[in-house]
Length: 165
Image (tube, rainbow, N blue to C red; front, side, top):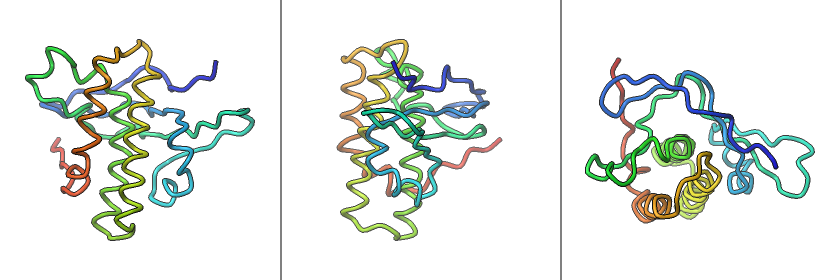
């Protein structure tokens, strides 16, 4: 079986909804590979390893030092789905959305291409949850996916959060 995650999440807590990656995180994604060149043009660190065989998975990276809220799950929802349950997939999703947000504000993508890549980023998120170890139950991953799929367009259209140290 092909390794699809770089390993466990290693991060430092800096306060309410603010974490910093201590080491690089990557995820090998079929859905990201479909738009490999476009993600690369948008500044995402994405690598297509050689000699993978039939299924091609490009590795999408979140760098050490990356600041995140893990997963934007309202506190009331933590009884059912804690942010760390889906954190690795959410961080990779945030990296992709960050590139889309930048492209939106710089007006470097058409609306159609932006929507196409947002759908791809959401599918990477779902793929990441499905490939997670330990396994994420469908009753957790499905509502997480369906919370970003229809509402993610607003996340791209708002200015990013500035974390204060």
